[in-house]
Structure formats: C-alpha cells, structure tokens
Amino acid sequence: MKFAYRLLLLLPFLLLGCKETTKKTSVVSQAPKNEIQYASGLAIYKYEGYSVVKVLNPWPKAEKAFTYILKQPNSVVPDSLQVFTTVTVPLQKLVVTSTTIIPFLEMLDSETKLIGFPHTDYISSTKTRALIDSGKVRDVGQNESLNIELLFDMQPDAIVTFGVDNTNPMVDKLTSNGLKVFFQGDWMEQSPLGKAEWIKFYAALLGKEKEGDAIFNSIANNYKQTLTLVEDLAAEQKVLYGSLYKDQWFVARGNSWIAQFLQDAKADYLWKDLAGMGSEPLSFESVFDTAAHADVWITNGAIMSLDQLLEENHHYAKFDAFQKKNVYSFESQKGATGGTIYYETAPSRPDLVLKDYIKIFHPTVLPDYTFTFAKKLD
Image 1: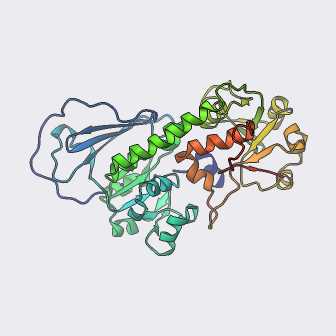
Image 2: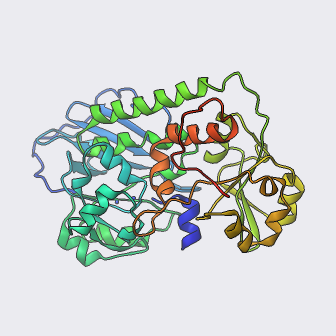
Image 3: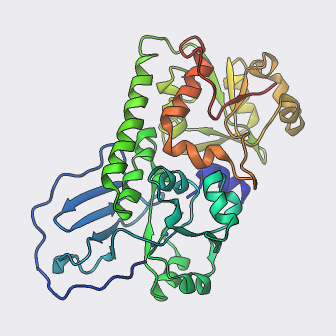
C-alpha cells in the first residue's frame, strides 16, 4: 500500500442534482478547438451551454476512453450526447480520491466544495486539513472499498476517481447506486505541464474556467521562463535516481515525468535512453555498474538523513554520490497526519519542481532560491 502510494503519486470521483430541461436537439454543432495544449489524456470542447470532456488515457493500456458532458443550468444538450454521463455545473458538492486534486481545488478557491475523501490522513494541506478537522470533509473509506452507504447519504454532485486497470468493480457499485463517477488521468501524464493542465478539468466542473486558464498560464509561463535560465548550460552532472525496494531498484524510464524534469534541468540522467514511461525494476548490481560514479543521487522515500539511508542498506555507501554527500530527497516533508507534501503538490506546481532540480544541478543559476520540496541529506 505504501509503495503503491509512492509510485502512483496518488489519484480521483462525481454526481449531479439539477432538473433536466425537456427541450432537446438532435445534433452537435461543429466542434470547436480543444482547450487543452499539453495534457495528452484530456480534451475539453466548449459549446454554447455545455462542454464535452474526454478522458483519453485513464490508466495503463486502457481499452476505452470516457466522455462526459458538463451542462449549464437550463441548457440544451443534443440527443446524440445523451448516452454520456452528464452533470450540471458548477458543482456544489464534490468527492475526490487523489491528493493531487487538493491543490487544484485550493488554487481555484473551491476547497469548501469538497465534502469527502478516502483516508483523509493522506491530505497534507493545512487549509483542507482544517476542513477535515471541523467535520466538513468526511472520510469515505479506502479507494478499493469506498463506503457506498455513506456516499449515498452525502449525495455529492460528483465523485472523481482514478482507475489502475480495465476492471473497476467499485465504480460499478457506485453508479448502480445512482452516483455519478468521473475518471481522471492526471497521474498518467508524463509531461510536467501536462499534469498541471488538469486544473482545467476541475475548473470546468466548478464553473471557473477563466480562473483555471489564468492559473495554468501563470505556471506554464514560469516553467518556460525558468527553462531559459539553463538553456545554454551543459548537462554535466550525472544523476542516479531511486532506491531499493524489496531487492529491486526502480529507476525512472527515459520518457517518464521524472526524466523530463532532469532533462529540462540540464542534468545527465543515466537512464535517459531507457525507453518507456513509468519505472523499470533493476538489480542493485545493475544500478551500481551504471551509477557507481554518479555525481548526484536523487533518492525516494521519506529519508531524512544519510545515516537513515545507510540503515536501509549498507551497500549505499559504495556510491560516490553518497560518499560526497550529494544525496537529495523530495519526499521528506510530511503533513500533520503523515501525507507526503511532494506527492500532493508537485504535479500541480511543476515550475517549483523544476527550480528545485536546477538549484541542485546548477546552484549558481538560482543563488537566492530556497528549495520547495528537495532536501539535501546530511
């Protein structure tokens, strides 16, 4: 459970409640342009009175995409779209199942719309934790076994969830009880800006499209401006990533989210040519052969010191990066109840993650910048 929580970077569910108008139309007008620029798994098309949202890549090897209709009150949706899950926006009561959504809701000043979350201890944000402590956000169970009776009693306008494969019995139970469920796929995005652009999904649900566009554009512009700081620099620092878990070392593949950050920060990631997304399990011996002399080690897990790292495996002391004390963790900061701040916040703020990496590999570029997530172990 802890490992799955670490690797997936954690993830989301939806219902409605407004009266349908009896007036209908049979055809969809000519399709507008897709509002999404960077996210490969999301598309939003705005029509007069409603939007069509497509979630194209909800989980690995997904065999289908999902189409959702977000309609304005008293608007008309064409007959051809009646087969798709439809909600009236803006939503007023929302249940989500991934911590990555919490920052999006807060950025949109809509955290008070959240009424339920599974295993609320995972949430780190002090603002949303205050809502939990006051009883305004209720714990609705675990992702694999949500409390359907409680959710039915709460009557959320929508539940936003995520799936890990093509079998989702919990979702079937929720929908058979009349609850509206939406899949989201922000965790499948490998582009840093692609993950962050999912704020537009929640902005559409909450009737805050203009705010969502402005927030994302600010983040994207900050990311691009930060890239210019290192565009003329060479990728000289050789980077080791990850750590052992049950005798396997999971390294980020060359097309992964992590590898993209390392490339953008002008670092020489030693597995940059390993094709694919996600991570690759390797033996310690294989990793050591490749990265024994790496300049920097980005470890994972809630490691606070080199001594703690060494307690996990004494072989770590063999790496040059360990001996030179060039080891960093992005996961050491915890919320009040144990949630990892990086997992919750990093997908929505890639501009800050990038600055952390640049500070590690090119410290003179950002001399006055203080790490947001990273911690150098000593």
